[in-house]
Length: 223
Image (cartoon, rainbow, N blue to C red):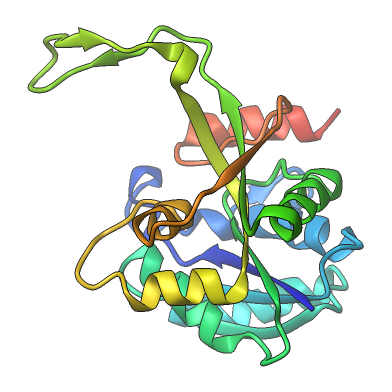
């Protein structure tokens, strides 16, 4: 079985105090609903675990019911850090889960086809993520706003979600993470000595963090 963990328990600090971007309107649906629907429609996903803020569990259940998310098996409260939320999602997966796909609920442009490609790659190699090659010139800034160096963009990728793994690979990576903080699940797996492969996706798949991002996503999804 392949289980998706959709993480939507962030504080949404750049959206403003008291705002939960997962439940903001995006077109005719809440932001979170777009990801739920994409995973519901993906034939390579068997079950869905949703991780939200504790106070949003009832609202999340209502969204899932409203949009017919039949694959949803559990809604669990997240932690203070993203990695804690992912671990809560892992703990809620059924025992027969062989592969797990982690996705940020704030990436509403994800499609069933992209999800399938990442799952298929993970089943071949054990760990996979969506990403795209950097096209901008990338500068390193060590302090303040002064440029320290120019990076070789030929070796750089912007990594996104979904990210897919053999269940035991990801669960063991987090179990042995200790006090290390990671910014995504790939980093946890990398620290465990595993290799992660990238599926290149050139379609928009950005993460909503600001009001401007919400406006861009609305325009894209309206097409």
